View (cartoon, rainbow over the protein chains, first blue to last red):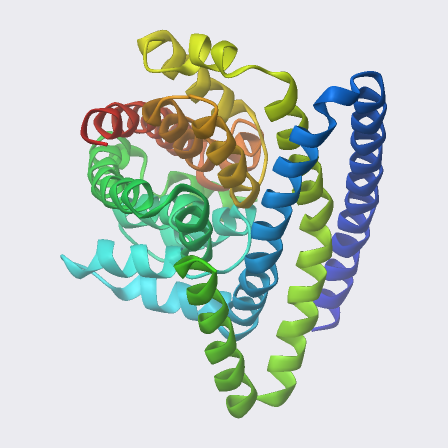
Length: 191
Length: 160
């Protein structure tokens, strides 16, 4: 537990540094934009109206998206994900992988060590690929943001196609990667 | 208010109530995590909004149509899919950007290619992926994902 805390503090520090950098970049972009609009005042109204519309739409959903992701990241632990996904097999496998990947929990770089743990536990490569892919692009809150900005036909069709191709890709990659299956896991254990 | 706004806020509210009933301490922790990620992503969101505003005022739709409009064809789709693969921006802010591109005359196919490859293919995260999953699996997944992004884009361009 202690060890985990120090690790987390280190992560916090780098992420805080990145966040400060992001705010500085934002202010730089904002100032550059304002200067540009001072030089071309006739563009001011169009730019401001568009930015204001997008700001309103974003602020209507962003806090809720963050709350949902925060809740799931605390309530669904990594151990639970590995436990459920490691033992599912057969036709249910890809669906369970899709479901756990789509749960609103954290950025993609968290999914890689989870996926590695799954492979070590003997999960099928196809399911692991589906899991990472779903994690990357079928997150539930992301789908709702897509619905908000791009509308239902776009979001719905893209979701269906993505699910279909992600499962297909998982099976294909499993065929191509199976000779090496588990090799990386063994290397890891050997140090 | 749009359906998506109501839906996501309702989901958040319901989840929050359940969380507080189930475990107060964990629920409070979740709120702290949520506030943290909100302020982490906020500068990126504001930045993309400023860029969209400027973009819509300064870049005429004819320019966008030329590069990624319906007439741009294959090269436009491949180019924007490659851009999506290289860029490392949160999916969350790619949607307003995509909407702005669509409004300025970008084709459905190129916008779909951009979002799909942005979320699925990660050149920036590739090193980490190779370290965790091995070279072969990481390259296969990213390579296939890129092809998949282009195929999905072409299908969406045809049916929408």
